[in-house]
Picture 1 (spheres, helix red, strand yellow):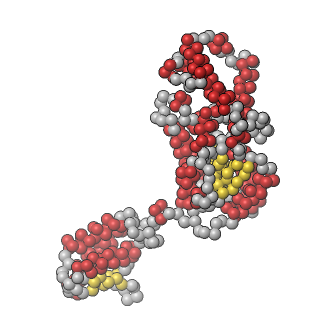
Picture 2: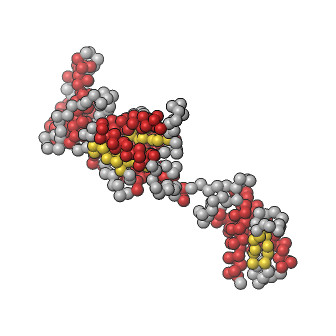
Picture 3: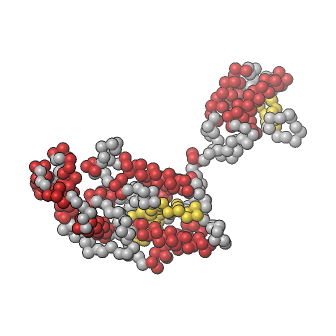
Length: 409
């Protein structure tokens, strides 16, 4: 069943829409199933929260990168690997998978599209449309909510570090001066204990300067649908993710079909879009048959034994029979071989090897045999073959020998 990706700007309402889509599909699956105990489809919602992936993995600020991390984006690569593995484990013709994460990279969406194509299941993309100012305001509202909760904890006596904060060191004075001058503090110039606080002060100053512009909606209040546990993104991290966001293009295979939901859509409008997803992707599958790429299709092996063993056995048998019959038919004659490898039968289809006008020795036949085995060890050139059984291998080897002997005539 389909793999449905949710994409959009950070703090644009992706998790809310993903939860609504999950509830809608749960309702439709229960209605379509004949028995509630055995549903027709299985539904999975995979997200950063379900895999316990922290939002900090998307922070590429070198100042926030731990010393043991190999690069600034190493944690993000590990997070995408965890998401990819979770999707791959459950994706099947009976499973509907909703992936609720940023999905902002075009190459990442293409990778998931190829995985769905490999399983021969449909693919869909849902984009949450939201202005940048609106998304920025939601993230800022979450930051304010977090700050208010922190202040309440301090007032209740949960935080007893106020005395330590009142102490001013020379490095703190330098950090304040650097932040006031508009320059970012450097970790090498500050004491380790004061660097983090000074960096936060600098980020706050930068944000206040940016918020003076028109592209900022600060009159946003979080509704009841926004979970208090929904984490916020640091301002610099949020701006970086918006800058790196790659808009979906419905003209490309990996971004189609594309369904668009806006942050202001009512539940009724959202349900109409969900109905389109159900009708076009889940119930009425695409008219064009989904086929995996030939390079990723695993070819069938002979049911009677190991493929390489059968390949060696059948080619050796043909070489043996050619040497036995060559004395009878003479040079330039025709050697008739059984297609199945057994004894000659009247009704069985026979294969013919046209010998050249000179005697063929064992070294020459063995050379041709080794070349044929090397070409077909991995199935090279046999993309159109359904089952590589003994009869098909013998036919291919006989054709290979006829082509080689024809060049010698």
